[in-house]
Image 1 (cartoon, rainbow, N blue to C red):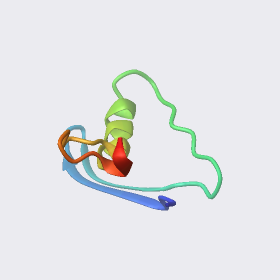
Image 2 (image 1 turned 120 degrees about the horizontal axis):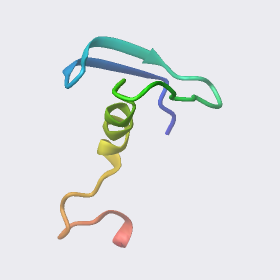
Image 3 (image 1 turned 135 degrees about the vertical axis):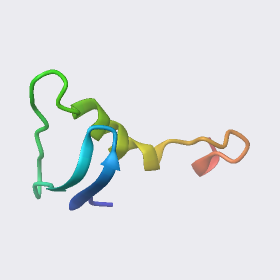
Length: 59
């Protein structure tokens, strides 16, 4: 799977933001309080297993 673009509407410090990611590498950098951790949390959320009774891939 390849993530090409991220669109965020009204989530924590983001209002209406669109990020286009690089084809090989994307660097997320900025000063404290600029929502870097929030952005990374949004990116990892779809891959987080929340149903421990039905884990993915037999784990």
